[in-house]
Image (cartoon, rainbow, N blue to C red; front, side, top):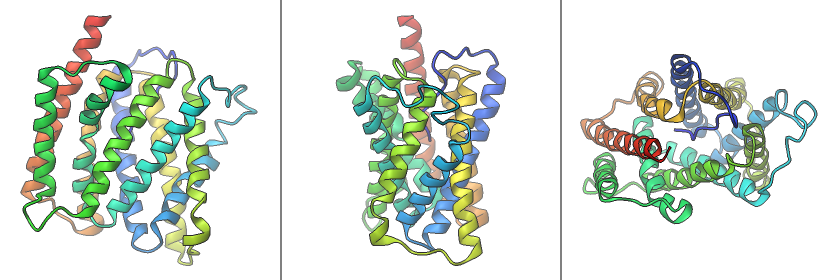
Length: 300
């Protein structure tokens, strides 16, 4: 799952094209997680995170840079931009670490809890009230998460806690993205995401660096950054053509790609517990999205 970052002031005019672009974007995100999981078994996970950010940043400079986009680095809220970008980096680091130990379908099912955390954090951060119906949806959704992690079956794997932490930090990232959309362009926000992430990912390198020697590892590191960058670009194009409320439910199609890739690459088959829990989480998250869409419609 990724927060929408459509261009500031973009006019939605082709919803079916937007839906197609969103569906393609979530496939690229599934490929990104699959690649990260495979690479983490062959090289240090922090090197994997570094490759994801630095290569993404280098490629994005071709399109978005201070020379081709005047005023790209100008922001009215620099601390919020840096904090938001740091949240995305933390989300990536936690998620990639969890992917070493959990199946792809498990991680994406837990990450689908992002709407619940958004509903929880939106109150104190945005002044949005969480009504009784939303609280019920949140509690039902978390019951689905419990089915996925099954704490009674030998205890909760620590990686599941990391993944849940990634969902929480991503919710904060999504909220701060919404806050910045009022003042900064999406190009500026995207640039800071890649810049701050690249700097943060480079800090631990002297302590964890492993030189990739196998051609397949080097190739997949390049592919990781390229596909991650392409996914964000597709997301921008999608939100330029359809409203966020229209696109949001299609985020959940990512679980299909994750199940297929998990089976093809790692021979992993989702358990009935995971499928049942994911269904509950998706249903609860979709209900929250419908409630948000309805409330915004009434407010408008």
